[in-house]
Length: 89
Image (cartoon, rainbow, N blue to C red; front, side, top):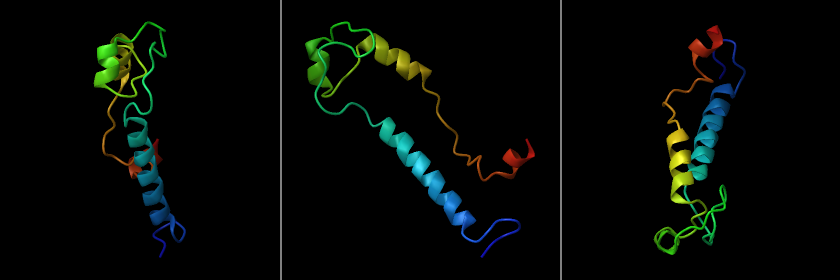
């Protein structure tokens, strides 16, 4: 059933896209996996052994990880793709 100008299945398609976007974002933030590096992937400084043991799979030193964490911006729970407000711009 289409609503307004939307074609059949458009609403479910939008729901699926929103869910897939959120799952991809969560997978990206899942954290380190695999084997820990001995040197930072960004600055190539040595990663302390205690950090490598505490966080298996760590790839960044503390300073580089703090920079990445501070640069992260949380998203609101608004679906801008399906919002009527986004169509007004």
